[in-house]
Amino acid sequence: MGHRAQFSTSYFKVKDPEDFKRFCRHLDAHWDTKEDLVRLYRDSRIPSELYDYKTDTEIDFLDMLAELMTPGQVMVLMETGFAGMGDLSAQACILESDGSRQWVDLVEIAMGWAQSTGKEFMQRRQVA
Image (cartoon, rainbow, N blue to C red; front, side, top):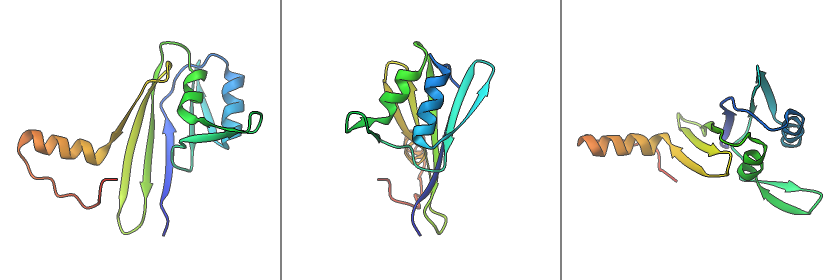
């Protein structure tokens, strides 16, 4: 069985809601609005790159998303996945409107916490 995943963002503000909707349609993603905030979600892993047909190049997905954000915004993209036999994964990316990002993996957090408290962490899967 292949890896299945879903991702969703937290709510955040965008410069232009219509540009955001076009971006979501290009990604084949869904979106929600809540007052002046938006979020997107999709049945897939968080993409690393998208193909730009106008320039015939690959574009960094997170850079494109950051460009849509209102300056000063921070949001989180959360991904959960399943690869069969109870092999679950969870990771997140904290993204700032300037394109800065920090990736976080749930297993790595658990391993760090166990190590800092002197406890043993029994890992069921390999960390990539």
